[in-house]
Length: 327
Image 1 (cartoon, rainbow, N blue to C red):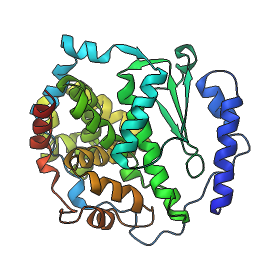
Image 2 (cartoon, rainbow, N blue to C red):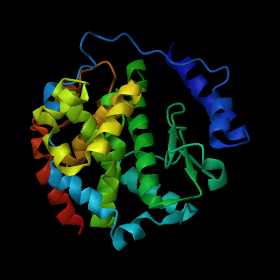
Image 3 (cartoon, rainbow, N blue to C red):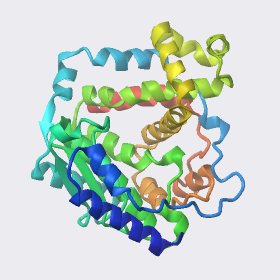
């Protein structure tokens, strides 16, 4: 499949989704009818491999507990209260990400779906790639921290637009390991600049499952008893109940796609936090992000002077530093 065919398929799907009726899931299914799925470009050996330094069990029990306890506070409940998705909020998020990523997002469309039609999806917002810059963001009419979620989805759009400005087929794809990197970078940046410590802890809720998956990967075993006896399990065992660990482990074993999506999500989230102050580097990364290059090579090119194989062991200190900045 070439670029022209890929773009045509994406735009066709976008129009079919916009014209379809029914629930979110029904509209999504209808939009996919007759659409040819894109195929990856030729991939050099090792292009999708992840450096071992990024597969660690670095998140501490202290951070796990801080995230868990945040959900019970009154301030966190206010942060979790649903808000309407408004035209003003959409434009605030669009302008924020446009400035942060130095990209024109004026052609990105946002459709707001009534919550009664949203129930089929667990996502807070959805981004559909469509052509060079005609992407579509779909949002429920009410969602917790609405502008923050919009910033995240516009981050996905900014990433894709900057990639596709290169005009080569490999730039139309994003590796699983960093598909969430720019979106979370934008989201965390917005929280630290404009929201609160509680908002950041709530946003880091995703990190608990993702870092648990990373710790399983770091252990080198999928057997729970062997995992439990490994050093990689130390921090999760200190901070979460054995029942929770076992049930999540079982879910991972039953659904390998879910497991690896969480492993890759953990890499994206940690990189976004560690590199949160590298604004120019993030812009460069989005622009040079082609799927057929190794992650460490892209990081080295984008973040000059930074260690592309940085140790994730610094993540705990980094989280505490960012919490202090937005408190």
